[in-house]
Image (cartoon, rainbow, N blue to C red; front, side, top):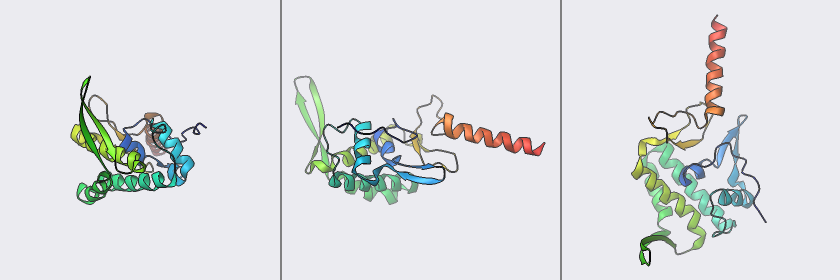
Length: 180
């Protein structure tokens, strides 16, 4: 059985931010993709994790815990979020190996149900190591989405220029036209 289409307005962000983006606003109402296991199946499929991980209640609970931990770290402070992210990371580790192709690292989990949550938390560490200043929240006042700014000059402000960027431009234009 294939998962339903992903209804979120922004997908394709790094795994940690994509997990936070499982909550979004639509016409002033917060939507939650992780409200049930069907939504979890959509998120797993969107991130290529559906083959290795079942969309069951245990995985859903762990992924929700990781989402709250990552949100606390991204929207709050590292001091606040670090213990929460560390609690998720405690359920897995990276195993270094030597293979016929050379050095390799692979994640290991004591309980496979922690896999997707752990991978998202681990991805957040990678983003922090790569460019912590490029982890952003959309600048539109009603948007709660996050993105990793990959623009050349690092000045991206909107989750999507087509959605939030255009709304901001339209608002500025309307305000100017009312002044005249």
